Length: 160
View 1 (cartoon, rainbow, N blue to C red):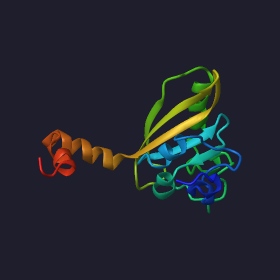
View 2: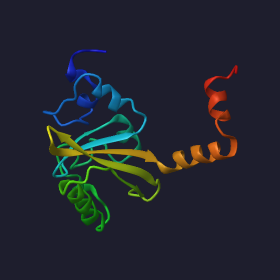
View 3: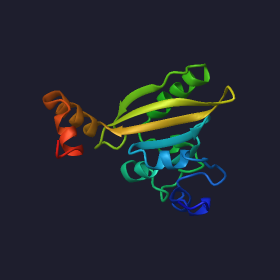
View 4: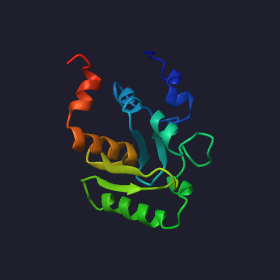
């Protein structure tokens, strides 16, 4: 891996706010997590989204109003912004536990979302959003319910 931060894909693909950088292993953890990761500041301004999010969600740099802009500008349904504001207010009022919900923002692919507060030195500075595709999670749970761990173990350890 290169030490030159300007060559990181999230920088060159404009998926991270210019003045905002992750340190150490954090940047690679978020980029390679296999789930969608979005980070916004405490007012809703988009600071970062990972490659998975750019490929599976409507988080392409070509869209107006992404990095550095409030995410509410991209919400398609009128009810979304009051709900979003209410959720952020819960955290501003002291909620520490994540908020989890199912959404269908694109009308085709339901997603499972976990939003958590980010505190630095006791101060609320922003929020993380982790996203999974609902269908993938359901399929995996059904497979487990029907066959237990066997399919996973056979895929991971074919000679066992």
